[in-house]
Length: 119
Image (cartoon, one colour):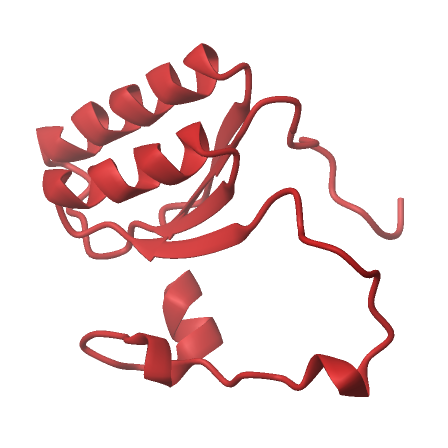
């Protein structure tokens, strides 16, 4: 089960209507606009990388599901190399978790390689 499947359940494609809008009045939140957004993406091919790159260049963090890519395919290597280049250009960070997730961060955001929790 991939990352997106864990969040959204088994679906062929997701749309904005698949997300549940929470009423922020029900939660204690800080006022003002957020400096960064977290985007969830699904990479099925090279064409999906453009939106991810744009989001990272705009200062946002992207969590991408790569379960639909065949790991033996050279497309995975090209996509990974392209996203690594973006992370370097913006002085961000990139990690791949297992065979199903890639995290790409914008300027000034680093990803810890240590798990939180019990030692």
